[in-house]
Length: 510
Image 1 (cartoon, helix red, strand yellow):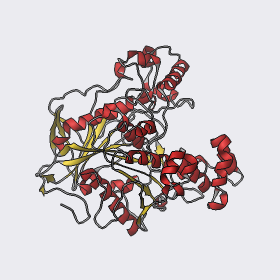
Image 2: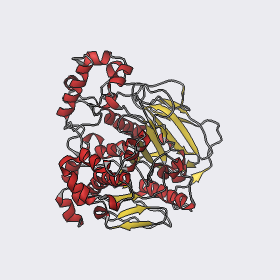
Image 3: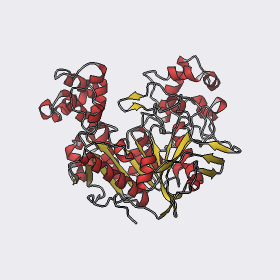
Image 4: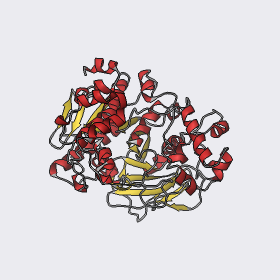
């Protein structure tokens, strides 16, 4: 049945009269917090603490406990530093720690006669910062009639160090990707335990943004994720290239040498704080790697070959992804990008290609040098790569693409920048999670987006009563407060023939 807001809902019965909701998982009982519209269960261990000998090992099963475990406070965020952003401290509450493999479950307060779809959120933060607790899933759960799970996963050097010594310990001869394995362990926990919370283990949507969106697409091509989810949503992160196992191991060995460590035993003996400080090295890149096992291929190569889990996928970008990077690099750092500095910046980023790029993005087409550079970053790093992955997936499954285009989405922050931020990277998240309090048009857009996302979790089709129909790729749903429209010119609008292989232009007419 449908609610007045156009959300798919299941019949419900009044919640049981209890001050503290309690559930029983396969590891023991949990006591959460009852709310007016949603119940919260926080700080649930989904794996053993990855400390001591478990540092840089695949996640191990959590221990059992006796009695009723308190689940009213979040677990520690994972080791990180410098997580302050315009949105706040992405680490959320608590002190960063290696003992951090915890998740949170948010359920509608009303009991349901049927199990609800489950939405598992993978947070962003460049694989180095962030936590699941930073995102409150209660509104999304209550308004979308879903069970929402947020989680922490190992970050930085703790989550993505590849090293020959670690590969030597592995039965498969690979290393790194521990953060991805954490996410998969959490998804297995969901399959095994979420029914206790009223969730349907046979209807799980994995969704994430930025590094979390990239992780979603990595799980789509990972054989280890087989059977762990039924739908996928990748926000601003699908398809970026990853280093090889060999290159990451070389980088990891060099990093270990800088710490005076020739072997893994030395690294495991180092205090976590020392490793965290050393991980800030500008030569290190803490990201997943293509190891041939967990990630057998680059994302686009796997998609081209059809070697991915053929579940329905919803993915997209924001209209001005790159402007936040420009603001952080210039305005928020106390300087401004000038007209004279614009070509210098482009040449520093793109080398021999700069002249061709500058010809496509002349200053006269943009309101300021910052907006021009932001357009280049938006198209090259986000819009066109994600358009490519949506196209490749469409050959095998239902593929839906969007562009979030509320140009006033960040105005409430009043950031000290000298150009309009528009709809930058990350600005759509609060619209999905039900955290918007803006103009009537913005509130209406947020309601429709929450309905699109949660009905996709319910049915595999994004829809909302009273909102325009969302067509599959190659049409792109443009989500703006003025109107929601279907674009047929997305690749042309973002100069994708400049940024993508020629076969993409041939197929899309770009």
